[in-house]
Length: 629
Image (cartoon, rainbow, N blue to C red; front, top):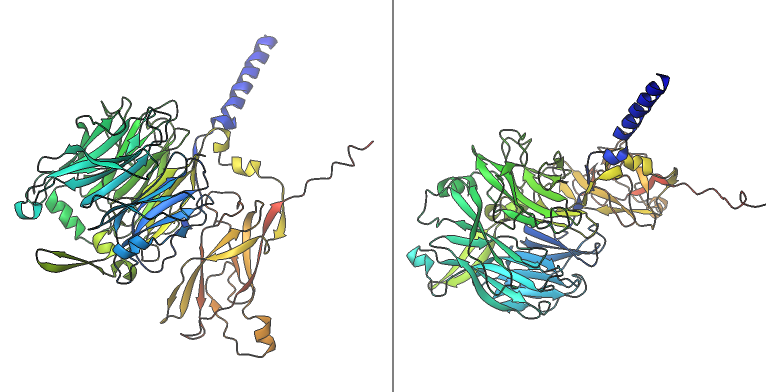
């Protein structure tokens, strides 16, 4: 009897221990600090894309429309990062600043060549190459004009067409005159390159609409090199005022972009019809219809599973829907809500998805939860580790909400052209044309599994570019306490020689005399540094100024963590790391806004001397003496 009882108790102990093992911890989304990408001034940024170098996870490439030309009109700019997204450099391409442009696309070849594509009507579609990850760029290759909404992808597989580049666009049939006839004669065409983007063959027709629009969405390459071309077929809005759906369809090419299968259906997307769509565009709300986005899993368990996500109109607001196909598009699951528990007033829109090398599906989107007027939004992320069957609880990504109706977004710029015997100028602003930040946003997954969303963020009132590194932890490291348990012994330290200050754009209100100064901490050392980090103000004037008895006009600090308004004021950066438990070499924290009130409306030449404290790894004990005999 005692033996049976002992065995039973042992079984209970083992079962309890197993149930508490970290290996069974639930997957966890870990969000890094929000990083400001653009430093182009108070000008609107719209329509973003981002790609990761398959040969170097530290090399990322983004692209955006920027209303930055001298007259305020748009050009396209690439942005390159060589430290995993902590810092970025924007590149002004001479051709773009000569012609202007729109619809930027970015990508990498299988060997790491970077690509940047932009529309510059009426000059054509410009294709740029970079062999140094986006630091410098070739002169552009000009492809056919009169294209729209181009999409780019490189074949990174080991299939028969590895290294091939594909570029699709929507165009009108040659000789068509839609302005006069109001009859749409649209088609999707493809260009392909087999020499790393030095030359292209095309345009080759993929499919055409029948008095409807037809636009390609983001392209996919399956594990065997099959090209998957998703498209939306949309109504001819000039004459069709009743159709309430876009048709999501696709074609494939199994011979490297030479021939294409007939169109096959994916699903119907409810956009409400042309009158509803136009009313929403004029409503002053940020939630607007966007096209479906696609991703494919090329890992293992769910290999070649194709995912699609879109925003569907439901009772006046948009809901994110997810569907997938496990048989290369032959059949699709019934679309399901990504966030069924969202507030009834909230809209979810502008989605982007990606699958990382571990097969984790990431979904990123804009969301008006918390903003019933739908004139502001925040960004959210969720993930699935089981092929889309279930989704992790959504996580807030943006550290501040976006308020897009600032002066920078509303400042119009002209688009001038000659047509019908006249010079025609259309004046548009970032918000008037792209109230939701553009027709699409970007997200990629790097070789090491991190997701990198690349979005337009209006926390300053003007759309700027932001990113963040997001990881989905599974296994033992998924436990919320895992990071703390793996943290090495640390000791307090002064970090002034290991950390510097990085400033985001500063705002100043002359009426209130308050400057809002967003300040980040950047690790300039070669070692990990650990929070809590504290920044203490030590001086408001340089020693020379004091010794020379010059007049000093120190500001008043309005929002220090310890309540002090002058020397001795402390700003606590404990929560500026997002979900991370350390500041890696080269990494930056979130920006903490410092509010400084100037002594007079024009006394804004502030001097700040600060010290920074935190923690470093404790020195290892000297084990040499213990081993001596």
